[in-house]
Image (spheres, rainbow, N blue to C red):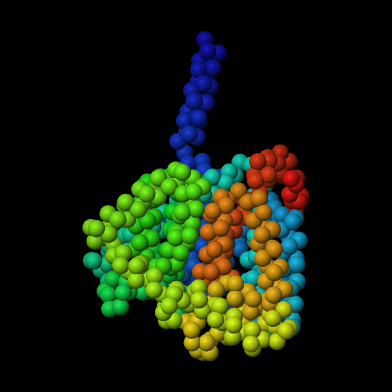
Length: 441
């Protein structure tokens, strides 16, 4: 009798545990590193600390601390192959610093070395499924999107400019970036408009919201296909009124439809939703249509992002010595080269590719490309998402040391390891060395 009662209680306890496990969001615990890094990138990028004459964004500090702590606790390993490429990259960057040494280069040099070292880290355990990484990214982008939607419509009740300011809420010393004017957070929808573009409150610029929601739309179309996610991400993207994510969608939405038939069906549903928003007047699509002419307008961001870098390259080739072309001008020197209206057509913008070429030369840029390719070898990330991330990294703004964007690259492209590593469970993980074996096969 007692034995039967004990057996029944055991069965009930097992069933209860099973029900608890099935109801709890286990993907969150499995993707907690991803969530921590992405949350730092999304919610801390507007806050910074002062170090001498330099500013360091809090998202940099948080990302480095999280990943280094996880590495020290044995939850992350260093990829042997990636590390070899990183050594080559670090040597050429250090040599460029040595040849052009100026103490003002040290902050950029240090940040470059540390941030790109983080691309060599990966999670070795098979339980950390990559689908959970995508769920984590989508969940956090959804939170930002809901904030962006609420922010936009709240402007009809309160001053929208006050919604995005944190003075009096957080300590003033964390808001030093406002004084530099480095981020263009408050932008009217059009000239003289009382409404400003949504930035999700915590993001540095509306263009950042545009990029991450566009990337989220692509991921949702390819991997999940949840209409509620698609509609909220699309509405937040439209309320950013930014063209940064537009090029990504124009290029990669058709490709997503070709790769996945289901993606094409959801894309059509998305277009119907956007068309409905335009008809009802909730969003003004003429703002996006008007941005199509920015490639010809030398004062517009479209020209500054996609056309001006090639003009800058032409002028630089006439000014640079052979040594500068091969080895560069040193870390963090692009701003001084293009500043003070020296080249009127840049508008203060420099694409990542021209920034890399100017600072580290042809040799450094070539090794940099090989390093990035080596880091993304056999990544579990869908190929279209990889291409979209690299397209944004190379062409849409100067992302060479854009730490929020680098954090997204780390989480989506490199942190989950390769497909072969992802499918392998390390039963002796508590005794494993700090370096992983090279990829095989």
